[in-house]
Image 1 (tube, rainbow, N blue to C red):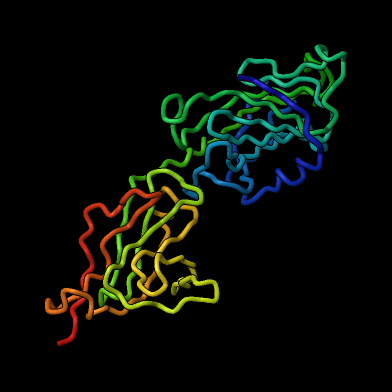
Image 2 (cartoon, rainbow, N blue to C red):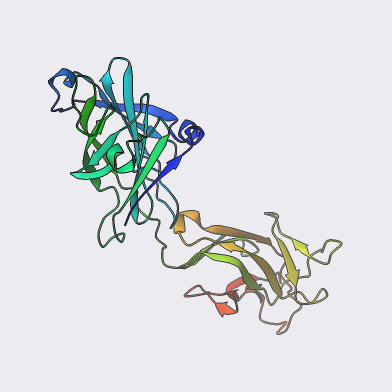
Length: 303
């Protein structure tokens, strides 16, 4: 799929904020007068391979910006970025653009548009890159041969054409990890659970079962406010065993969400002579147990 659109110059101003000059590379050109023109690569804000970032489906990566000069007073900037299935080129120039060619494909020629050039506005062109991990891989570097003419579609005349290579490392699409529930506790009463699902969930129902704990104080709305600020409803204000929270769940281990609880064992709960209280037995997401191989959390009761 190939698409192009015009965007306002204001969009260019915000999108082409250049951060950190990466490197200066030599430019090749068929125009002998342009052999000393600079081709400078920079990065714009957003996820990049250098930062170890990734993009969500439908999200755009940070861009690699390449600046090339027609002559000392005039230049062209191309910002190359990608989303999950397209590479995106945005061109802007200090002068009108009559002709753009990328890897042998004529992207724009003013002769095909009534002789009208791209008059210094940002010009956007999109090209399909296919399916992530099938047609392309994360941080795969793509290099594009680009020709820009500013006076006509032939490039005749000194200082009217610039030919250069521009590269961009395709920022990978974020993928989910296997679901994982872990917990940490020193005394089996103050517990921090950590969880990520195997897919992103919005407004998920999360339930913790604590069968033998003393009732916790509730706020004016009858809710339990946990040590980390999360607010839970309880199944029974006078016999609190199931604590329910609603919220978004991540799908990557590095982004796992935590749940903190601070309980007191109910050592009077039957059986009263076994010397222990079963603090935690289950964790559910949208009514499905996600406890996995985790053991029950049991506290020892004082003699």
